[in-house]
Image (cartoon, rainbow, N blue to C red; front, top):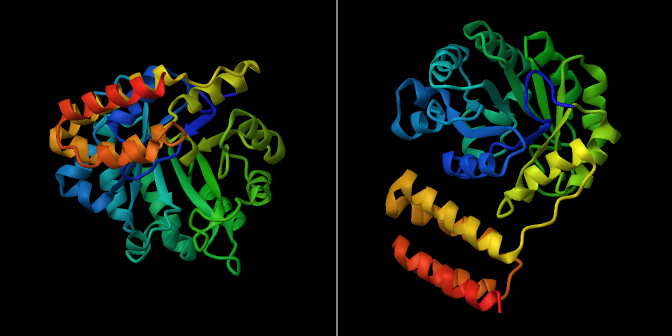
Length: 320
């Protein structure tokens, strides 16, 4: 069952360079699941840096979007919280789990798991600044010698977080190895606020398994949805009904790829949209016939018309 007014207990993971407006449009058109923005830096939002401001501005999107913020200053979080509320955010998620070096070296993301006092100040300042619900996404801990997810979760609850998302890997693991679902279950048992579990949920059945095994209120899906935007809705539908919807046919993959490409070019312009589309193209066709050759050809293209022609030509061969 969904919680706190969300439409689903399945969440798309916020992913830099991926969960942008075109991606959210596609997921919303398919239906099912809660949509989250890319992370936006609080200092950049305050300066109205064009890129960060664009990430945070979801006002024109006709569906609810959780906007994720990253940074290390309680004051800037408070300012950014007020701004993103004006920019249409449904709720605010604080990133305290990103393992990327650039973020961590700025004492942001998962670095805040080593500074509970500052993390608490950030959550409290954000909660105080806005009537929106505030959540926190974090990890199992910094490394295997510093596993503090349960303590961190209790701090989040005491600081006013409405719900939390825990990824069952340490910062040191990044996205490698196996997610620890036992720590996710321990976090759920330690707090009264809703908990979303994240890590290795790559199918509707795995989502159901996490809900049962960990007792969590929701699940978050990340890398498994790349090139497979139907998966979020298929998971949502299965958890609601017990029915497994069919996987997309080749013709549906082609149509979605063309739709996604068009949205990217409309949003970023032809040059920017084409550049971003290259990674998505690879994910969409990864299991199809001669995918490697197709990707190699696609990376050399610069215009939307060239891309459409190549996609049509490629899928005419795949569908034979």
